[in-house]
Length: 190
Image (cartoon, rainbow, N blue to C red; front, side, top):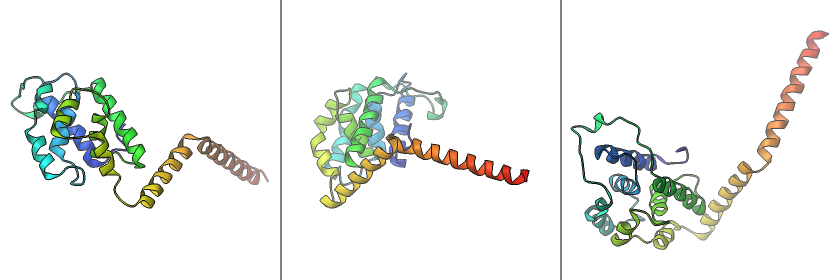
């Protein structure tokens, strides 16, 4: 599931799981994803210093149940599933990465995925000053030609991956291997 995620985005999900484990939660919800984003941090292009300091002091924790800290984070090694809204946020992150023409999902895409629909963390993020359209505009930096080429390459990759061509190539390779095997067997019979 996380093969498209960059190391930083994987760490966001890991920190969300860690925060949920510290609070002895049954599921990883969207506020825990925000706490994971807060721990990992975002690129300076998307979060100015002012927004970072405001995010550290905002009331994201209001959507999280009261803390029940254990003695050590290592005591909680159980598997914690993702809540439906958290799964939806991860799916929206993939859609946002596709719209950027990016093969990899980064923490910025996770943040935009959280803002795409109403969930427990949306109001807190919006109160801090995050706006989905502003984040999309900030991620589309660079020249128009570079963005266009990145999107075209990504769309071509998706088209090739989801089309019939890979299947045809596999069938052609299979028949080529079979013909080579028959040729080698016929050489040994002589």
